[in-house]
Length: 333
Image 1 (cartoon, helix red, strand yellow):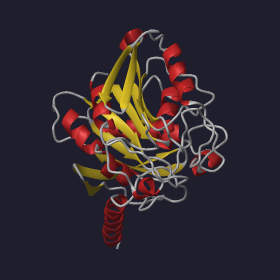
Image 2: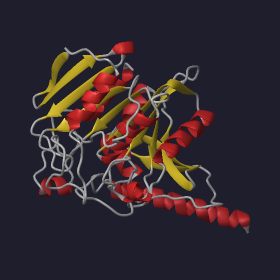
Image 3: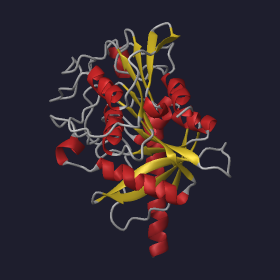
Image 4: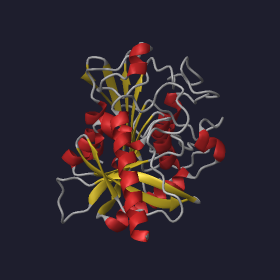
Protein backbone atom coordinates (compact mmCIF):
# COMPACT_ATOMS: atom_id res chain seq x y z
CA UNK A 1 0.00 0.00 0.00
CA UNK A 2 2.75 2.48 0.96
CA UNK A 3 4.67 1.66 -2.22
CA UNK A 4 1.55 2.28 -4.32
CA UNK A 5 0.85 5.61 -2.62
CA UNK A 6 4.50 6.65 -3.07
CA UNK A 7 4.38 5.79 -6.78
CA UNK A 8 1.16 7.75 -7.28
CA UNK A 9 2.61 10.77 -5.42
CA UNK A 10 5.77 10.72 -7.55
CA UNK A 11 3.69 10.53 -10.73
CA UNK A 12 1.49 13.42 -9.58
CA UNK A 13 4.49 15.62 -8.75
CA UNK A 14 6.10 14.83 -12.09
CA UNK A 15 2.92 15.71 -14.02
CA UNK A 16 2.50 18.99 -12.09
CA UNK A 17 6.11 19.98 -12.68
CA UNK A 18 5.95 19.19 -16.40
CA UNK A 19 2.68 21.13 -16.78
CA UNK A 20 4.39 24.03 -14.99
CA UNK A 21 7.22 24.14 -17.53
CA UNK A 22 4.81 23.98 -20.48
CA UNK A 23 2.52 26.66 -19.05
CA UNK A 24 5.49 28.92 -18.30
CA UNK A 25 6.46 28.98 -21.97
CA UNK A 26 3.21 30.84 -22.66
CA UNK A 27 3.66 33.68 -20.16
CA UNK A 28 6.35 35.86 -18.61
CA UNK A 29 7.38 35.08 -15.05
CA UNK A 30 6.62 38.50 -13.58
CA UNK A 31 3.53 40.13 -15.09
CA UNK A 32 2.22 43.53 -14.01
CA UNK A 33 0.59 43.54 -10.57
CA UNK A 34 0.87 39.72 -10.49
CA UNK A 35 -0.40 38.03 -7.35
CA UNK A 36 -1.89 34.76 -6.14
CA UNK A 37 -0.81 31.15 -6.37
CA UNK A 38 1.87 30.42 -8.94
CA UNK A 39 0.81 28.22 -11.86
CA UNK A 40 1.90 24.64 -11.34
CA UNK A 41 3.56 25.33 -7.99
CA UNK A 42 4.94 22.10 -6.49
CA UNK A 43 4.53 21.81 -2.74
CA UNK A 44 5.48 19.15 -0.24
CA UNK A 45 3.33 18.73 2.84
CA UNK A 46 4.33 17.00 6.07
CA UNK A 47 5.21 13.38 5.46
CA UNK A 48 5.30 13.78 1.69
CA UNK A 49 7.57 11.60 -0.41
CA UNK A 50 10.37 14.05 -1.31
CA UNK A 51 12.25 11.77 -3.72
CA UNK A 52 13.69 14.09 -6.43
CA UNK A 53 11.43 14.20 -9.50
CA UNK A 54 13.10 14.89 -12.88
CA UNK A 55 11.75 17.85 -14.83
CA UNK A 56 12.70 18.75 -18.38
CA UNK A 57 13.30 22.42 -19.19
CA UNK A 58 14.94 23.99 -22.18
CA UNK A 59 18.69 23.64 -21.81
CA UNK A 60 18.82 20.74 -19.40
CA UNK A 61 17.31 18.57 -16.72
CA UNK A 62 16.02 19.89 -13.42
CA UNK A 63 15.05 17.90 -10.34
CA UNK A 64 12.33 18.93 -7.93
CA UNK A 65 13.71 19.04 -4.38
CA UNK A 66 12.20 19.75 -0.96
CA UNK A 67 13.48 21.17 2.31
CA UNK A 68 11.93 22.37 5.59
CA UNK A 69 12.59 25.95 6.66
CA UNK A 70 10.87 28.49 8.87
CA UNK A 71 8.20 25.99 9.86
CA UNK A 72 7.19 25.33 6.24
CA UNK A 73 7.91 22.65 3.68
CA UNK A 74 9.52 24.41 0.70
CA UNK A 75 10.48 23.29 -2.79
CA UNK A 76 13.03 24.24 -5.41
CA UNK A 77 14.31 23.02 -8.76
CA UNK A 78 17.99 22.06 -9.07
CA UNK A 79 20.19 21.72 -12.15
CA UNK A 80 23.57 20.02 -12.00
CA UNK A 81 25.74 21.15 -14.94
CA UNK A 82 26.71 18.54 -17.50
CA UNK A 83 30.07 20.26 -17.93
CA UNK A 84 31.93 20.48 -14.64
CA UNK A 85 35.26 19.44 -13.19
CA UNK A 86 34.33 16.54 -10.91
CA UNK A 87 37.49 17.11 -8.91
CA UNK A 88 36.68 20.72 -8.07
CA UNK A 89 33.78 22.30 -6.16
CA UNK A 90 31.21 24.14 -8.27
CA UNK A 91 29.73 27.61 -7.68
CA UNK A 92 26.06 27.68 -6.67
CA UNK A 93 23.55 30.16 -8.11
CA UNK A 94 20.20 30.69 -6.37
CA UNK A 95 17.75 32.18 -8.91
CA UNK A 96 14.58 33.83 -7.58
CA UNK A 97 11.56 34.20 -9.87
CA UNK A 98 9.53 37.40 -10.04
CA UNK A 99 6.37 38.17 -8.09
CA UNK A 100 3.46 36.02 -9.26
CA UNK A 101 5.87 33.77 -11.14
CA UNK A 102 7.21 30.31 -10.46
CA UNK A 103 10.50 28.46 -10.61
CA UNK A 104 9.95 26.42 -13.77
CA UNK A 105 8.82 29.45 -15.75
CA UNK A 106 11.84 31.47 -14.69
CA UNK A 107 14.17 28.63 -15.67
CA UNK A 108 12.45 28.16 -19.03
CA UNK A 109 12.31 31.83 -20.05
CA UNK A 110 15.66 33.29 -19.03
CA UNK A 111 18.22 30.80 -20.33
CA UNK A 112 19.81 30.54 -16.89
CA UNK A 113 19.97 26.74 -17.11
CA UNK A 114 21.98 26.97 -20.33
CA UNK A 115 24.19 29.61 -18.70
CA UNK A 116 24.83 27.32 -15.74
CA UNK A 117 25.79 24.47 -18.06
CA UNK A 118 28.24 26.64 -19.98
CA UNK A 119 29.80 28.07 -16.83
CA UNK A 120 29.83 24.88 -14.77
CA UNK A 121 27.49 26.33 -12.12
CA UNK A 122 25.02 24.48 -9.97
CA UNK A 123 21.75 26.41 -10.13
CA UNK A 124 18.71 26.26 -7.85
CA UNK A 125 15.33 27.87 -8.56
CA UNK A 126 13.41 28.32 -5.27
CA UNK A 127 9.60 28.38 -5.27
CA UNK A 128 7.99 31.36 -3.55
CA UNK A 129 4.95 30.97 -1.33
CA UNK A 130 2.00 31.88 -3.56
CA UNK A 131 4.49 33.25 -6.06
CA UNK A 132 5.87 35.81 -3.61
CA UNK A 133 8.93 36.60 -1.47
CA UNK A 134 9.39 38.30 1.88
CA UNK A 135 11.83 41.02 0.85
CA UNK A 136 11.45 42.72 4.26
CA UNK A 137 10.33 45.93 2.61
CA UNK A 138 7.75 48.40 3.91
CA UNK A 139 4.93 48.56 3.12
CA UNK A 140 4.70 44.77 2.82
CA UNK A 141 3.95 43.78 -0.79
CA UNK A 142 2.81 40.25 -1.57
CA UNK A 143 1.58 37.30 0.46
CA UNK A 144 4.98 36.22 1.85
CA UNK A 145 5.81 39.70 3.14
CA UNK A 146 2.38 40.20 4.69
CA UNK A 147 2.57 36.80 6.44
CA UNK A 148 6.19 37.16 7.57
CA UNK A 149 7.42 34.08 5.71
CA UNK A 150 11.09 33.44 6.54
CA UNK A 151 12.58 33.25 3.06
CA UNK A 152 16.09 33.91 4.39
CA UNK A 153 15.79 30.69 6.42
CA UNK A 154 14.66 28.97 3.21
CA UNK A 155 17.78 30.18 1.39
CA UNK A 156 20.04 29.02 4.22
CA UNK A 157 18.37 25.59 4.30
CA UNK A 158 18.63 25.28 0.52
CA UNK A 159 22.36 26.04 0.65
CA UNK A 160 22.88 23.48 3.42
CA UNK A 161 21.00 20.76 1.54
CA UNK A 162 22.67 21.36 -1.83
CA UNK A 163 26.08 21.57 -0.14
CA UNK A 164 25.46 18.26 1.63
CA UNK A 165 24.58 16.55 -1.66
CA UNK A 166 26.88 18.30 -4.13
CA UNK A 167 30.45 19.61 -4.06
CA UNK A 168 29.72 23.33 -3.64
CA UNK A 169 32.34 26.08 -3.62
CA UNK A 170 31.27 27.89 -0.44
CA UNK A 171 33.21 31.00 -1.49
CA UNK A 172 31.17 31.35 -4.70
CA UNK A 173 27.50 31.28 -3.77
CA UNK A 174 25.49 33.78 -5.82
CA UNK A 175 21.90 35.08 -5.83
CA UNK A 176 20.11 36.17 -9.01
CA UNK A 177 16.58 37.52 -9.30
CA UNK A 178 13.98 39.35 -11.34
CA UNK A 179 11.71 42.06 -9.91
CA UNK A 180 10.55 40.83 -6.47
CA UNK A 181 13.05 37.98 -6.91
CA UNK A 182 15.78 40.58 -7.36
CA UNK A 183 14.62 42.27 -4.16
CA UNK A 184 14.96 38.87 -2.48
CA UNK A 185 18.53 38.62 -3.78
CA UNK A 186 19.19 42.05 -2.24
CA UNK A 187 17.74 40.78 1.06
CA UNK A 188 20.20 37.87 1.07
CA UNK A 189 23.06 40.33 0.54
CA UNK A 190 21.74 42.27 3.54
CA UNK A 191 21.20 39.28 5.84
CA UNK A 192 23.75 36.73 4.59
CA UNK A 193 26.89 38.61 3.48
CA UNK A 194 28.95 35.86 5.07
CA UNK A 195 27.57 33.34 2.56
CA UNK A 196 26.65 35.35 -0.56
CA UNK A 197 29.61 36.42 -2.70
CA UNK A 198 27.67 38.36 -5.34
CA UNK A 199 24.17 39.15 -6.54
CA UNK A 200 22.81 40.01 -9.98
CA UNK A 201 19.36 41.59 -10.15
CA UNK A 202 17.06 42.71 -12.95
CA UNK A 203 14.24 45.26 -12.59
CA UNK A 204 14.45 45.35 -8.78
CA UNK A 205 15.46 47.61 -5.91
CA UNK A 206 16.84 47.24 -2.39
CA UNK A 207 13.58 47.08 -0.42
CA UNK A 208 14.96 45.97 2.97
CA UNK A 209 15.05 49.21 4.96
CA UNK A 210 16.86 47.56 7.88
CA UNK A 211 19.70 46.25 5.71
CA UNK A 212 22.83 45.72 7.79
CA UNK A 213 25.04 43.70 5.43
CA UNK A 214 26.30 44.20 1.85
CA UNK A 215 30.01 44.51 2.73
CA UNK A 216 32.02 41.97 0.76
CA UNK A 217 29.19 41.30 -1.70
CA UNK A 218 29.52 42.30 -5.37
CA UNK A 219 26.51 43.68 -7.26
CA UNK A 220 25.28 43.76 -10.85
CA UNK A 221 22.03 45.70 -11.24
CA UNK A 222 20.19 45.83 -14.61
CA UNK A 223 17.23 48.20 -14.97
CA UNK A 224 15.07 49.84 -17.61
CA UNK A 225 14.89 53.63 -17.58
CA UNK A 226 11.12 53.51 -18.20
CA UNK A 227 10.19 50.70 -15.79
CA UNK A 228 6.59 51.32 -14.69
CA UNK A 229 6.47 48.41 -12.22
CA UNK A 230 9.59 49.23 -10.18
CA UNK A 231 10.38 52.83 -11.20
CA UNK A 232 13.98 54.02 -11.16
CA UNK A 233 12.93 57.10 -9.16
CA UNK A 234 11.16 54.99 -6.53
CA UNK A 235 7.57 55.16 -5.36
CA UNK A 236 4.88 53.53 -7.48
CA UNK A 237 4.55 53.37 -11.24
CA UNK A 238 1.56 52.91 -13.53
CA UNK A 239 1.86 49.11 -13.26
CA UNK A 240 3.21 48.68 -9.73
CA UNK A 241 1.76 46.07 -7.37
CA UNK A 242 -1.01 47.19 -5.04
CA UNK A 243 0.25 49.13 -2.00
CA UNK A 244 3.77 49.29 -3.44
CA UNK A 245 6.06 52.22 -2.74
CA UNK A 246 9.62 51.30 -3.61
CA UNK A 247 12.88 53.00 -2.58
CA UNK A 248 14.76 54.66 -5.46
CA UNK A 249 16.99 52.23 -7.33
CA UNK A 250 20.13 54.34 -7.02
CA UNK A 251 19.81 54.53 -3.22
CA UNK A 252 20.45 50.80 -2.92
CA UNK A 253 23.31 50.89 -5.41
CA UNK A 254 24.92 53.83 -3.58
CA UNK A 255 24.61 51.98 -0.26
CA UNK A 256 26.43 49.02 -1.83
CA UNK A 257 29.20 51.35 -3.01
CA UNK A 258 29.63 52.98 0.39
CA UNK A 259 29.72 49.75 2.36
CA UNK A 260 32.16 48.18 -0.08
CA UNK A 261 34.39 51.29 -0.22
CA UNK A 262 34.13 51.56 -3.99
CA UNK A 263 36.09 53.96 -6.12
CA UNK A 264 34.35 57.23 -6.94
CA UNK A 265 35.51 56.90 -10.53
CA UNK A 266 34.68 53.81 -12.55
CA UNK A 267 34.63 52.50 -16.08
CA UNK A 268 31.79 52.96 -18.55
CA UNK A 269 30.90 50.55 -21.34
CA UNK A 270 28.14 50.17 -23.94
CA UNK A 271 27.42 46.44 -24.37
CA UNK A 272 24.47 47.22 -26.67
CA UNK A 273 23.12 50.20 -28.58
CA UNK A 274 20.41 50.77 -25.95
CA UNK A 275 22.42 49.95 -22.83
CA UNK A 276 25.14 51.71 -20.83
CA UNK A 277 26.96 50.04 -17.92
CA UNK A 278 29.08 51.70 -15.24
CA UNK A 279 31.37 49.64 -13.03
CA UNK A 280 33.19 50.62 -9.84
CA UNK A 281 36.06 48.69 -8.28
CA UNK A 282 35.78 48.18 -4.53
CA UNK A 283 37.91 47.00 -1.61
CA UNK A 284 38.70 43.31 -1.53
CA UNK A 285 38.30 42.88 -5.28
CA UNK A 286 34.52 43.36 -5.22
CA UNK A 287 32.61 45.26 -7.90
CA UNK A 288 29.41 47.27 -8.15
CA UNK A 289 28.00 47.53 -11.68
CA UNK A 290 24.85 49.22 -12.96
CA UNK A 291 23.45 48.71 -16.47
CA UNK A 292 20.65 51.00 -17.66
CA UNK A 293 18.54 50.03 -20.68
CA UNK A 294 16.96 53.02 -22.46
CA UNK A 295 13.99 53.16 -22.84
CA UNK A 296 13.72 49.77 -21.10
CA UNK A 297 10.59 48.66 -19.30
CA UNK A 298 9.96 46.03 -16.63
CA UNK A 299 11.70 43.17 -18.39
CA UNK A 300 14.53 40.67 -18.59
CA UNK A 301 16.46 42.11 -21.56
CA UNK A 302 17.32 39.81 -24.44
CA UNK A 303 14.33 37.46 -24.40
CA UNK A 304 11.08 37.49 -26.40
CA UNK A 305 8.47 39.90 -25.00
CA UNK A 306 5.56 38.25 -23.21
CA UNK A 307 1.94 38.92 -24.09
CA UNK A 308 1.40 41.41 -21.27
CA UNK A 309 4.50 43.34 -22.34
CA UNK A 310 3.33 43.54 -25.96
CA UNK A 311 -0.14 44.63 -24.84
CA UNK A 312 1.26 47.40 -22.61
CA UNK A 313 4.00 48.53 -25.04
CA UNK A 314 6.75 47.56 -22.62
CA UNK A 315 10.14 47.81 -24.31
CA UNK A 316 12.14 44.58 -23.99
CA UNK A 317 15.61 45.10 -25.40
CA UNK A 318 16.39 42.75 -28.31
CA UNK A 319 20.00 43.97 -28.27
CA UNK A 320 21.19 43.55 -24.68
CA UNK A 321 21.49 40.00 -23.34
CA UNK A 322 20.97 40.18 -19.57
CA UNK A 323 21.77 36.49 -19.08
CA UNK A 324 25.11 36.80 -20.88
CA UNK A 325 25.96 39.92 -18.85
CA UNK A 326 25.19 38.06 -15.63
CA UNK A 327 27.32 35.10 -16.73
CA UNK A 328 30.31 37.35 -17.44
CA UNK A 329 29.87 39.12 -14.09
CA UNK A 330 29.65 35.94 -12.01
CA UNK A 331 32.44 34.23 -13.91
CA UNK A 332 34.96 36.60 -12.37
CA UNK A 333 33.59 36.68 -8.84
